[in-house]
Length: 417
Image (cartoon, rainbow, N blue to C red; front, side, top):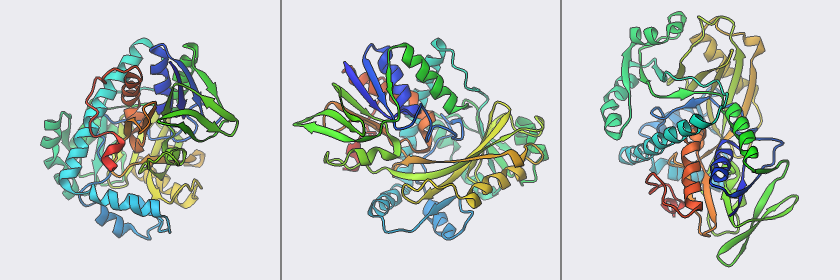
């Protein structure tokens, strides 16, 4: 079958790889000059199989209201006349109710554990260098009340199939000795031991090269403008370089997916959320973390990428604005130097910003669109790197007419209808 994959981030590339392994004739289109150069380029690096949770949850909106107008707010709403933003926000608020939160958490965990199996399956046969680290993710807490609340929820996570362990201050330092030098007050932490980390961009680039050896064709510097429909089927992708035909089309354009769907009678509730990251050289290995860390106070993640430390976080709802605001970017550096003093070389920090494709419930949109030969693999939010191998296999199974290995109920666009 001739398959056209729209988008060459980690989701699109992993999908193309799986399709090529199944024997399809695959072409990938992306507006960049190579794979993984937008959202996948400098993310936090976490493969949070057990650590991932819905953004929408109890108490989130109360915090967001308190953060309004604060320059250093982890979650920042730029108030604007944007109907899509307000519609998305109302849906997000509805997903903050506790029963809905736990329903969404179960779906994320189910998909994440499947994605872990699929990524490990790829790594059994493919030699991909991406600074892969095991050992888990350690979530740190400064507020003892927040820690107690999340410790109380550990049993619920275990019932869903997760693996979480509570640690006191001493336990956190025993697990990650570099925290002994921190000026940050640590009440305790929660460790998800089976989680991993790595360089998403390196993984995407190397897997794209491997896909090319399997026959995948890449059309770089080509922007997808829309999709052409005849009757109940999609016939062409409309690009700034002409039309591309295929038997099946895969939409994996992240934040830009709703724009491509215009005219197809299907609105995808995906809103771009700008995030920041920095990559800074490590000066003293003993002072820098070996584990991947999440600071629940600062809403930042820390991962070792070779001899550098990657720090990512912040969430800004401001449409498709991609401007790197230095004042916001430096917040990540200031927090890093408090948590890991003398670990890094701050004058050599490289900043980056990108758009995360967020759905109101934090779940990706996966499955058939209204047209049977158009499949959706988009809206992964902050879990694109984590879920990519799983949703890629799901889509590849659907293309060949097979039932996916994991239950995908609740992941389709129909949940928003």
